[in-house]
Image 1 (cartoon, rainbow, N blue to C red):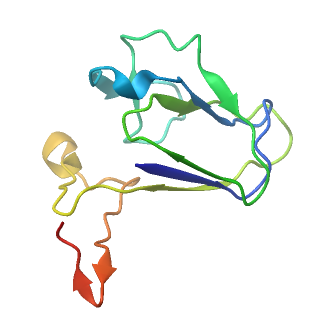
Image 2 (image 1 turned 180 degrees about the vertical axis):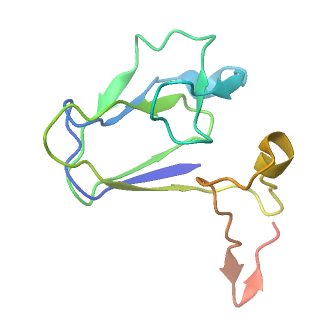
Length: 125
């Protein structure tokens, strides 16, 4: 699952999260490297699906959006003169392995898997 916490207001102009309702029920789509100029390494895009029906999620500071991991989502460029900041967390089952090093030869600058603990012990199920 994903959790997107708005630190600043997310408006149409400053690059909010956009979601495609119902897309979490579709088969998993192929993700390719995002080739836009100035995109951070490790970001991917789905190119075999039309995102025209995506809806912006407008948020106030402190708002939290929790969404299914397969829900197609994206954020757009910040076209305002202000800052749009958010904290983003993705939760995966215990034992999930980040395959970035194997795929690209370097560690992911975007993913930092941290085990969840319960009572001081790693959660395994």
